[in-house]
Image (cartoon, helix red, strand yellow):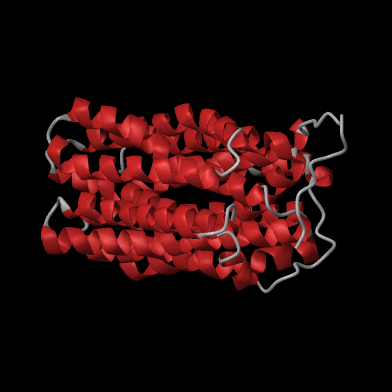
Length: 394
């Protein structure tokens, strides 16, 4: 198994900024489209009278698509090149994003979800591989913190745009598709600087899922909370008495928390020998924050304050988990592990909307908070088990 090199003694590690700018700016444009699209589509379906369970089921198609795309992404990049594969993914994502407006039948939204999220999954896997490959080991956490910050800005901008343009007409869909197409520009400019996959991974794809369990379990929880939260929080908030615009602004504030905390968390992870401790702490904060949501229903300012800090810790599971993964592997193994990382994120995006939507239908509006708390509670238990009984560093 390949291990990252720390470099020769006295060697000054430099960050390759052109490659990082291309990968980060490209995926941030996709983040805007996803941040806009998830609440937009849920509100439209809610207005059409679709139940929370069916909305969650449709949102879960994102995870199904990601689980299908992640295992083949490394193969596609090996055969066609990283940049070329990303450019085709941009085109497919933009076309399918606009297609939601013209697809009037509910069943048509299922294949559109598959195409859209399959393409964006490819972009996420290859952009993160590109970033990890271009990052010096001793500064990987900081670089990934920058990546997560810019991506969070995109996710925060999406709900903000939604709060301004609303859910009527084709305009919000044109904004989403246009943002995705913009991602092609930096990819095309830096296409000759993208990493080359000229070797095959050492293990079968699914072995990478369990190779670094603290990282893959963290991103599973993050995927469940992010997808379920973005998709169903507008419904939870409006049923709690907030307006559609207020619900969108709460999502924006949570996104601001993501922006504020990711670089400090990434830099902190560079200074901690065992990142599992930091992941455990963030999971505990996520658990406590979720359990306080029912107590804050109806108090917009208090909920906004909690979501500001809570959102940063939730997104930190992704940043620190990815940094932990990148510190262990290099080359084709890293590319395959990144794909497995996104695969686990995809499983979370399937489990999250389904579990949260069904819990709301079964137990009432507060089921939104209880379901999210359950996901964090499971990871806390896993973290305790790994810290107490697992190997010293895994």
